[in-house]
Image 1 (cartoon, rainbow, N blue to C red):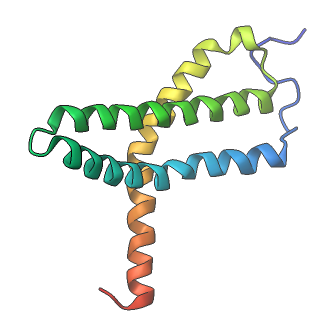
Image 2: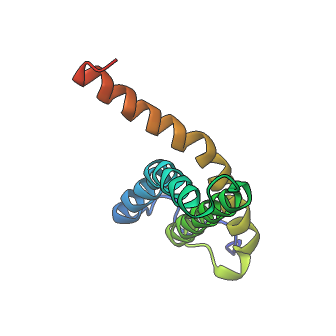
Length: 125
């Protein structure tokens, strides 16, 4: 008898889902820095010097959007592992939180690496 939490076939990965999940993990590295810059400019334009609360709300919105991407990524992971939905709620929440926390490190690292690589290639250091 199969345990409902363990995958039915452990090596039955779908390549399309795997590639999509890689893009989902890299997407916040582009989305977060651009969103922060746009939000800062927008808040400064509207609120001027009294912008701390509005900027905090913009950052909260960015974190919620990142959590939505993490939720979608984990749904794809559960689909790929063929885990039944009733047994996946705790795992779904846990991995969504891990995704958001990992993006706090991954997004700036990828962004700075691309920026540094651009500066090295163009000689603008």
